[in-house]
Image (cartoon, rainbow, N blue to C red; front, side, top):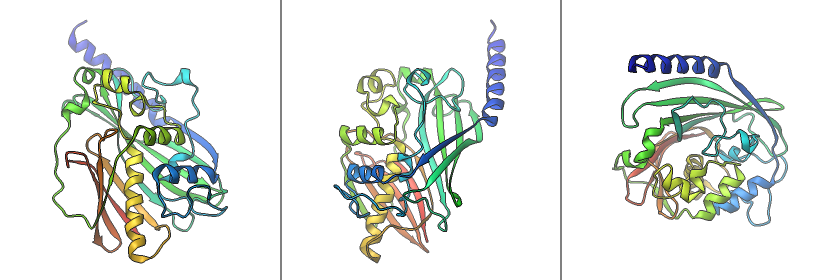
Length: 309
């Protein structure tokens, strides 16, 4: 088959998949129970929320920002998962089979926060799809998903996450080889050094029911996707950022959770198990904060902004 025919067929397959994906929608029900919040706080050693060790949050307590990841797990049997262990909803066709978490944007209705005891629903649908040719990752597909969460009072929050799918040719050298070295030149108002252990990654994977092999299967991460080791989860990075912000905020204004209006972040480079990372932030005025994570080489790995009421 001529290359022109192959290219034409690929475009046709992608066009048909895009049309199907834009119509796809999943609805996941869950009860907001107390135990997962306590377990995540223990996993992160986050003492700012008041429920660690054997103390669990009481009914009616607000779910902290980014802790929603321990609810609405993918209800997918193993035989329906992709070869990398991830669910196949909204997954583009071959050869786009290497998945990365690119970041997310979270917005909240502070008048109707998610609370312990709520009967809630997450509705997921595609916001947009972008097919990129060439560039740092070669051919890739970016999929933005809107995940709207409702409780008995109505809409509570939205997480719009972005997943990037690269082609299998990158498995020859690994996506880590294409990473950029970026230095954050601003001085932080606060920072915390964290050593992500295999136990931390395992516990977070278990709590969020995330079976993506790059986070716990060292052989797969090294030999299939060509990373130096298992990767820290993208959403875990976001929770570390908000936890550091909460600690700083409490030191300035007293204890308690923060009322987060919005939070957005981008994952710029991988973070790996057993390699120290530095979570940083600075107050930029009017309730806004710039947040970022540096890797063990002091290169910028995650960058975000948060707005507090």
